[in-house]
Length: 327
Image (cartoon, rainbow, N blue to C red):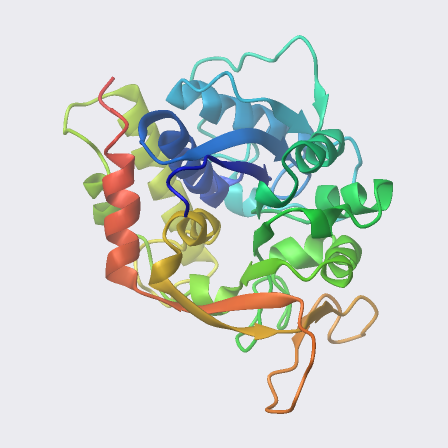
């Protein structure tokens, strides 16, 4: 990262418990760190829960950190797909929204797709887009302005399964499966994608102890208690759905987009061409990656496949300590 130049970042998300960890991480760095990074917008999509709820949860997290100056966009297109409220709770955050102050809805409701288009036009090849949910908004931005995705610096997206099982079907991961047609359009539209698949995110379980290590102090507070309860809820559902092979904790899938943005040195991977199957009977929604050893002149993605777990935990816990959860 060029420390003489501020990096503009936009995050497109569907909060969602693991989105909350990604959002808090980027918001805390935006507001409290000395990094030359600026969060220029948060756009929300249908996904883990419905659009009204993902929108409200993004606003809640801004209020949680005290970063209410960041514009937040809403998804206005309904996708005919099953959400993940059975995993994330009816409100998307472990049915814990009552623990937080009532969400303050802005007078003017911004549109997610318009925000993405405007951000790319304003910041061009300096802008990094993080995607922690379905690619609906990103694909719609490309439909509205063909070629626009290729103008941004890069898109760091959590999604897909390359050489491991899916988590929504035997071969498909939730973010891709929820709106596979949009994902296919994005991979076909640009060659600047950094993909973080389940192959990487399921390599480390985030535990209660890891969450406690992220607190700046041990004083009881509503914010600390919310994070504890969210961790407990997410751990419980991960165990129930046998996600972690009996290791007590949960996967912080989406937080790796922030990890890759701020700490790229802890990740390793390879360049591949990625496409999404939208029609197969048994392989529908699969992220198709040709890993054979043959010559190729073009690829559209860098796929992160390994990371240093200790350095990741050090990064996320020490960064969280910049924020006083004891308030």
